[in-house]
Length: 225
Image (cartoon, rainbow, N blue to C red; front, side, top):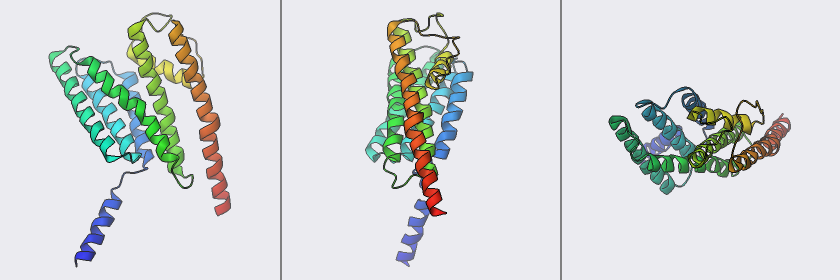
């Protein structure tokens, strides 16, 4: 009886296991992008945006099966950051803004590497592998957007003058995909240098990693057929 109960418990936990479910992560990333690019960072909207970003980052870590210690540290950091944002919303001030930006910045920076570390360990290329690579690609765009905001605090980033935070996200993905609309351009020398790195990263990521994964997946399917 005990053995049967233990078997049921193992099946239950396997059923709710979140590892490698990058489809859910992709939906979370796209939702977060829409919120960040459409909502103004007003008094209470900051709390909603922070909650969306925190949820997405934690989903990334859980799906990527990072070490339990890292997850605990991330949960503690996210809880602290959300508490800071709540205080900011209540007081309508910028208290702890530096600490909040640092916590979320570190999580955003780590997230694409966590995904890549996981999908490179897959024994064979699957749909989850390809979707995970797409998630990492989108997160790279968010990483550079946050970096551009940091550079903007040091010196005006755009040649067109000060712009709202949503424009940095828009500019990052335009650069990552090398669309080059030209409505916004980098102004400072440091900004131009980082923009070039993002454009090169985006092209190499698509041309080498994702193209290779798709080719491997297609080859495996042909062999299976």
